[in-house]
Amino acid sequence: PMNGESLGLLIEEGRTNMLTQSAYDAVANTTNATFEGLAIAPDGTNTAKRYSSSSGEKAVNQISFGGIAGNDYTFSVYVRSTGVASQVNLQVGDTTYTETFDISTEWQRLDITKVNNASNTTRAYVRILNTGDEVEVWGAQLEEGSYPTSLIPTSGSTVTRSSDIATIE
Image (cartoon, rainbow, N blue to C red):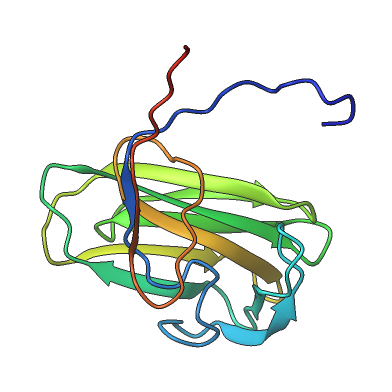
């Protein structure tokens, strides 16, 4: 970006962000995590949400969705710590599979993919692991597929992005 040279061409397949609030709803669907306020998101807007955990592990924005058994689902979200460092779990699929990530004060996009084992108990969420930690979250995306694609912003309903079509004439 500094010298104006192309970074390449991104061509993506069509996908749907199954989450209705990619910037997170401040208090909906949280399990014992405390909403602390808004923060500056990676896109420069004041839409990131800050959450804290005052007593052990706390889930932020737990989402249940009706996935299809046997299909891959990928959950991705931008996360950063307000302290020196922190740890979070991401979960997608049934309640037995999570992955732990070390996070810093820099925004980073985390993702996790899992084959869905059930069609009615599927969940996706961020869990704060350490008591006293504060984390900021933004840009959540849940999509059917084995890898994350670029963020599809949502605000109140799911959104589908059409497949990109590139041609050279």
